[in-house]
Amino acid sequence: MELIALPAFADNYIWLMHKDHHALVVDPGDSAPVLAWMQKHPGVQLDTILVTHHHADHTGGLLELVNRTGARVLGPALEEMPVTAQGLVQGDVVDWHELSFDVHEVPGHTLGHIAFWTQPPGQDAVLFCGDTLFSGGCGRLFEGTPAQMLDSLDRLAALPGNTRVCCAHEYTLSNLRFALAVEPGNPALVSHAGLCTRLREQGLPTLPVALHTERAINPFLRSRENSISAAVRLHNQQAVDAVSTFAALRQWKNEFR
Ligand code: ZN
Ligand code: FE
Image (cartoon, rainbow, N blue to C red; front, side, top):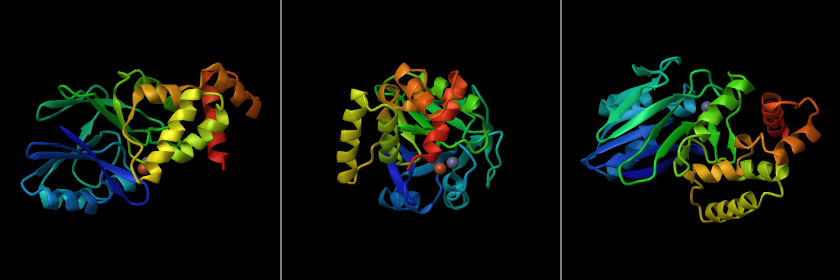
């Protein structure tokens, strides 16, 4: 099982899984990078497309890919898709050759947002989390509440620590700049920021990232830690419990330059 990040637009990744003569993609906002990959791998058939949420940078390539390949599309039952799609809800399982993907509802960025988790035999698990969890950050709350997003992130953070987290955007360096402002004394964060800076200097993705790394460095998974809640409270005195602290942290990030 090969896991590939196809860059799209300025900072999106379209994740592709490849096994024998079959391929699957996640959140194809643009068909061109997928079609270019297919052209370089003749004989491989794109048979399945997974979608995490309705935003155009995740769905814009669906129509052309379906027309060209006949691939089936599976996406959130609670959101409108631009093509016919099988609607998925919490607890559904998507079978794809020898893999099965658990579907998790993770509202916050959008109300119907879902994530996909799978355990390939003999490899570390894989999570496709769209715009919910980013390395060092999380998605903006366009539709959901802070309480919903905190609960969604808590449930993703509880997945096995060796899970390879496949986010839909390369936002890592700017997220880590904010994370360092919140928690400058976190040695794991300082060293991970150094690693990611070197990767980006070489033009390499910072993803996937291990979930156990995210638990150690991502302020949005760590908002109950004293180091973080104290920093948030200095910034916003309304941060008095888990949800208000998370909300204030997200607001601080929105305003951070
Ligand atoms: Zn989005
Ligand atoms: Fe996006």
